Image (cartoon, rainbow, N blue to C red; front, side, top):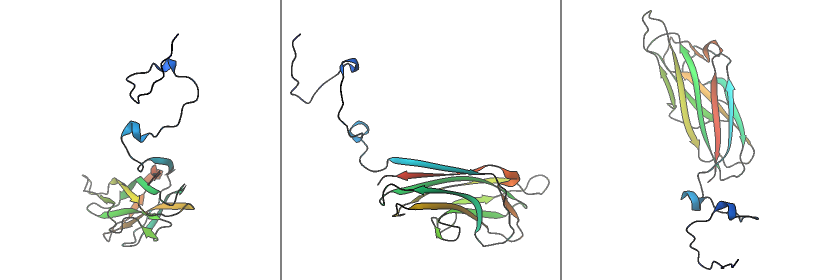
Length: 181
């Protein structure tokens, strides 16, 4: 059987069953057309189903919903998603939620605090309703390879409201994704 050395960089097709031996590493961006950054390096999630509650207005409250992640590079970013059911005791009253790097009250990743906004309308009995607050935010500059804590916090915007995150021990979740720069 004669062999021809391929000197051109152009090969139309190669039968995969004919490829043997150790293959060289390739850059995936050549396959996807996506350059260096934006790759998900790791995903961490946590769930909580412990009811909390308060009627204190304009104060950030801890939900207990949090997760830790240790980044592989100081240039990485963290994309955070969360979902949390919250019961409002009265209609037409509002709560907001956000994510903090660290404990509640430290670095608010959504300083305008309207990431998750819950507002209920009246039901037929005039009582409160349960809404699901969700949010997503990018921590663009954690600049750390130490363990980082991300915490979901919430607060009541309107007086006279009592609110209950994770009402009746319903499930909430937070997902952290390390994104390569």
